[in-house]
Length: 124
Length: 288
Image (cartoon, rainbow over all chains, first blue to last red):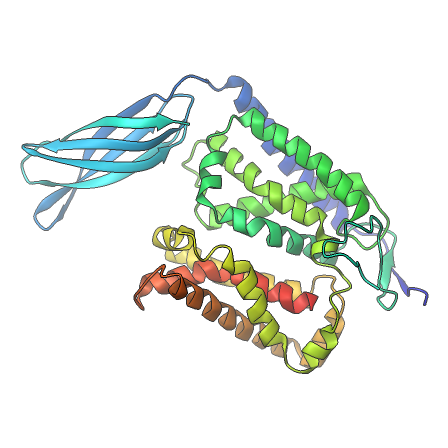
């Protein structure tokens, strides 16, 4: 049996899709190549800050732990120790990619200033 | 006859169903592109729902990801030459560019919708995650004719005539979501996604399901539209099969003890897993 053929005529769809595709490839490949050449390759460089959000839950103040990675490698399995007076709590963060920020929250009794420090992590 | 091996790779040639009208002339059409998208969804969705990929995309050296993209592009060229997603003449370079480019756009859209990449992330990491997730999507795209053959499967007409599309839809939903349901990602995403994202996911599930079954260039597309009688009947069937896909997704989540209560978490996790389930259901109905 001979295939039945139907003419499609000129197809404007293809050049549009081809243009969008080329643009997407150029942006992704060009961007990654640029960052590959320019971004640092040093170890993870972590900075932790703790901020009082001003919110309260069950009489305790909610604090925001912000971990920023300024280094060139991803930090994994972070353990952050938060001390508030005599109490200590550990907070786990799965990973902080290079150049990124991750957050966690802890509740702290009223009138106590908490401190946070990173006690361990691994690099990927 | 259609492609004889499961992936059709053994044929290394375009084989068409003689009874199907083929087009000639002037490049990719939207229905053909939708077939490529269907192939990309089959291979790409399980990886897009994997948190290790989200982390690796932001961890691997960007030049390493560029190398993977280059290898993937050449694989796309070869696959486009021998399999492809178009019905007509072989144009590997144009097809490979379209396959990779559309896969990047598709992956980016899904990752933003699922909040796996956000605008406040470092742009290097955004590009890395999108690029890594687009690799399997682009290969699925290039394998469009094999993974989602225009010729469909044996007995397609018999199944449709018996109203078996609902059973086939449930089967397709089960196959695609079974890979994802035992993992913690659906519940994790359900916790993190905002209501507008979940609503958008439901709309996208319905829209893509409709396009795959009633618009993409698969055998029996016209017959499917004809037997439904009207566009409204096709829309009603799309919604009904989506509900079946949600039942399958919810059932799997309960079976794998991902959540043990009938609560909001189960509902939202079901919507998250419902997207791959709906894609599986649509592909099952389009191909069988």
